[in-house]
Length: 70
Image (cartoon, rainbow, N blue to C red):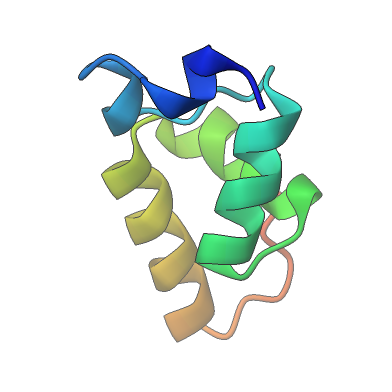
């Protein structure tokens, strides 16, 4: 694990970096989704964690298994 993962700056803590495998791994576990679903949510809702979380929750509430709307 690099030092960058241990000490993210405040801006990075609010966003998911889709180019970082460590972050993708972490957020797929936290949000209980696949990498493909997470990438789709980031494309549609943007990289902010709260927006991605809300997007995934809305999709699940609708019972929409197909999260790929981008």
